[in-house]
Amino acid sequence: MSIDIKCYPDGMYGENTYLITDDATGFKAIIDPGYYGVDVKMDIQNNAYLKYVLLTHGHDDHFLAAQEYLDEYSSVKFAVPEKDIPVINIQRNPCPEPTVLLKEGDVITLGETELRVIETPGHTGGGICFATDKEIFTGDTLFRLSVGRTDLPTGDWFTLLHSINDKLYSLDENMIVYPGHGAPTTIGYEKRANPFV
Image (cartoon, rainbow, N blue to C red; front, side, top):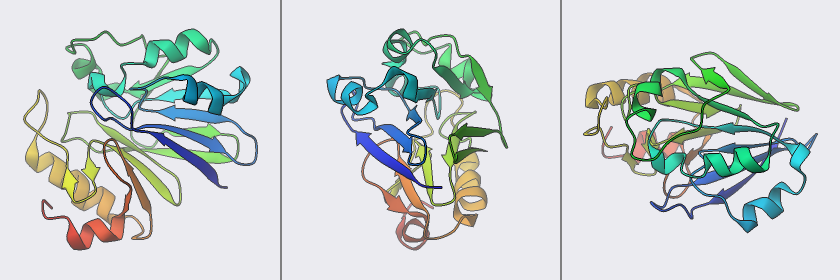
């Protein structure tokens, strides 16, 4: 089970949109659809390959382009964290209606790849991460040498620290972290060097 990962840090707020591809089948998913452009369309190649558009949390910089994906790829499933619906509903920009609501323990199957849903509230009340055996997409929970802000609606500092310390830092130290903003890192490096946790 292996995946190819492409990152497009081109959103309005420097948000990372990820295109992941299951190597065995070519099936694809978008994580945090803040950006959509010709480069992404060319990398998707075939409408039938894109199976999911996935959201880590309800801030609109992470879903600004969601409707464009849903319009272009009519059979795609749009999956969002169930507990972040209240946050999604108060954003300045409208979010499309989800087709799947995600919670702790859910698994997104993408060919031979499985993405496990881990609830990591703190940046928002219902934020989630998507994890394989080797990678984790952390949205705005954990960044390289930083963490998500908690001064926006439903954010909470102590809840964020709990999510990072008890859930993310319990993962394999070699796991690669793909954050919602900025460069990749690893769980082990953040445990040793992140000054906020």
